[in-house]
Length: 188
Image (cartoon, rainbow, N blue to C red):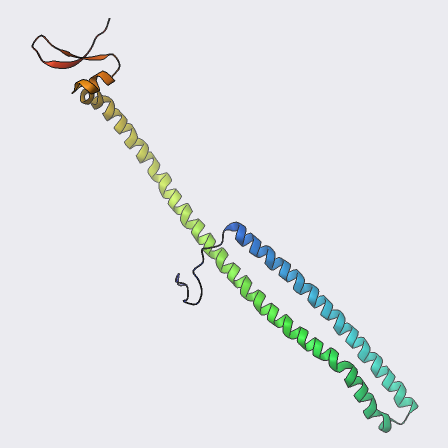
């Protein structure tokens, strides 16, 4: 899977967990709306079936009361006229449901890809954190060695000139009897 975005699609950052949760909520809402539409169409189909059954019963009654050859074509025309619009509606609804189902499948596939990518990124972050945790004792040991080295060497480095000598508490820059300047600490 390439990380490069196609030229016609802008490069988008990965979804945050909140955005992913919102997308899934929207998909849930879309599924509920699709379910409502399917229920509505089921009612329409049930109504159409009832009307068809009633039309058949009426045709049977008519056949019994009249000459079947004379009224058969008339009954078929009446039934076709009454059912034609509803059949078009049913076909349109079926087409709309198929389109919505395909769109939902695409959205769910994209959400699954985004979830997989987010999980992979989380795993990579956890691996980096584990590496950092394994190096932490070495950093601590290095800081301890540095502190010990500074404890030993810092006073002698600070005692090399008058300004830094006077920064150390209790030390004074003074000249010895041999006319050598030194940093000394006087204890009373």
